[in-house]
Length: 131
Image (cartoon, rainbow, N blue to C red):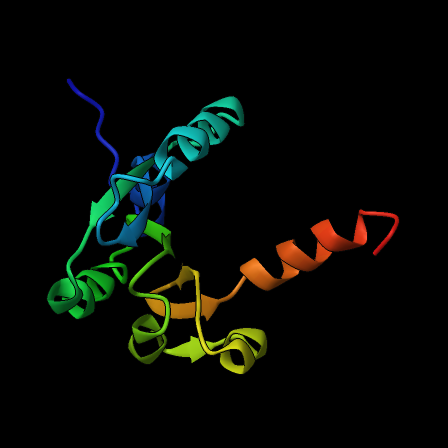
């Protein structure tokens, strides 16, 4: 006799390989998938990081797909950083102030937009003694 167990939706998601990726058009220049996947593997995180080449006319539909629980979020690059702001549910104040986002996080189907470029840039500048 086989023993079976019904898993809750959250338990099923835990066992799935979650997805992350980068939106852009074109994406042939991006090395993000290589180093992001290496980081996920090193940290033993059960996720894949993919390149999603999305022309401008397909952006709204593709971002909407991020609401699926299998997606943790995405990075956003040219030419979508400004347009994507209108396609998320909530913007971080810094992203709103800068006028672009580069990161979308899926929080239980709610899409949150952030700009991490500015913080990283300022941190790098501050690390230079002469700045």
